[in-house]
Length: 328
Image (cartoon, rainbow, N blue to C red):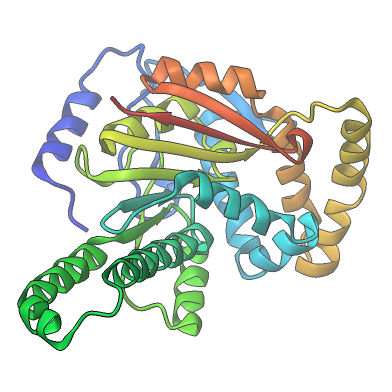
């Protein structure tokens, strides 16, 4: 997907901004080794799990983690959460309640879980609307059918157009994750309504105001500069568009918190080693959860980025939270 001229101009202006800004990275279509920062700014550190690393190194390390786990990613999700991740994602879709014609951008959504659920939900909404229409018509006479035949054809064509316009764009910086998603789509017979784009959440390869809904599920904690990802989400959303983030958070119940910590640090890395042959990657994933801001702090970050009507809902006692906000 070629970036529009306005997006390219924006990037040029970004690179010529003050040296104190850190938005100096170029769009990466290959692994994030191409991302760099001005020497004038000076090297800054960030966290990679519990490890402190230079900011420029984190993206490469995160890329390697997901490159390693891509083939077993969905299986490990089921194993680590005992299948509960499916309920969390279903809760996201029910809260989203998308209608035919909606356009979704799912960032860090490489294996397509959210996109597939979105398309299924939109299709079910269309079917529900069709049943309501049929029920309201009752049992028409042949004359009624004849009189309304042309009108019905036009309405059906309009519905088909709206359904065709409903689409999900899966954007992920990791090519291996996208390969898994495409393979899943092939096995599921999903060939229309979804597209796959290699792109960086901190500098999305899309023009302004392109999407009705932006989702990121269990991905934003892996971003080096969360504030930039939020700004990009706001930019690509249409006015009235909705941002929705599903992410591990701070458990509110102290008893559950102790059990959750024990399970996270003592069981999940072992599962990673047994199922995926990769202890270190799942050790990082557990640590990254602990480094992510608590619910109220992330809510404030969303508001600072410019989102309105921001709120969150805790799931499973705060193991996961669903944050939502709108672009006015």
